Image (cartoon, rainbow, N blue to C red; front, side):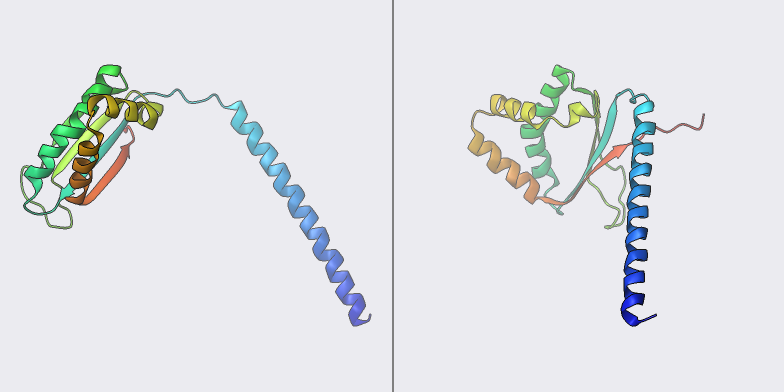
Length: 161
């Protein structure tokens, strides 16, 4: 067989493999779609997130004052609306290493995951609660300038049962 004939045979063989792979992917995706549509949608329930804040040394009081002035009223308004079911606040009792250190932790139980992701409603509440938007934005900017680290960790329910 000539070199040209071998190349042609390889091209046909490669093309056949591509067609087979595409057909296999299509069949797998159809099967996965059928299986996923057969399962009932999970019921959306309470959704808990732990927000932790690590503040620059010496600025914890300033950060906390800004949090209480500008963020706590928003959380309370969201709780009054029923989007937030509960809010708890913690600070460490003792010291940790710098790497493990956090200064404040806020745990929020949202009504559901959708309630935690509605920035339009939050923005409307912010405009209502803080008519001086320039001051609000300046103070919120300062609050975040004081942070060394901030994490938002969604929590999953767990039980040994």
